[in-house]
Length: 156
Image 1 (tube, helix red, strand yellow):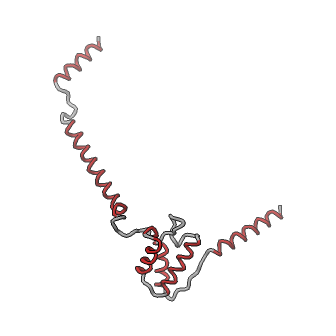
Image 2 (tube, rainbow, N blue to C red):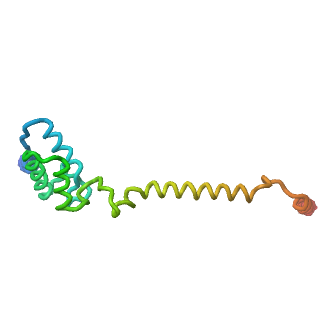
Image 3 (cartoon, helix red, strand yellow):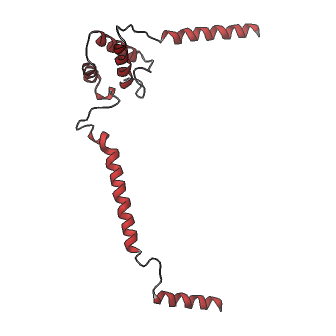
C-alpha cells in the first residue's frame, strides 16, 4: 500500500514537470508589447489544432508561431505587418476573423441574409393565411344548414 502511494506520487510529479515545460515566458521591453503579443496570439488560430488559438495550443507549430510573433514584435513590426506575414504564409484560415473578400463575402453576410429571408418567408406565410381565412371562422348559411342536418340526424 505504501509502495503504491509513493509510486503514484512519483508519477504525478513526473507528469507535472511535463506540464511545466510547456509554459513559455517571453521578456518584453514594455507592457504594450506584451499586450500586443497576447492580442495577436488570441486572434490567430493554430494551424494544427483548428479550433484553438495560438495562445492556448500546445502544438509545436503553435509554439513556433508564438516565437515568430515575439520576434517580429521585438523587431518593431506593427500588428498589421505581423498579421499580413502570418496570413501570407498560412492563408486567411489562421485569422479567427477573416478579411472581407469576395471569397469570404458569404461567410460574413450569410447569417443576415438567412435571417432576412426567414423574416420575409414568415411574413408571406402569415399574409397568405390571413387572406385565406377572411371569414374569421364564421360558417356560411349553407354550411350552417348542413351542420344542423348532421346534428339532427345524430340526435335521432
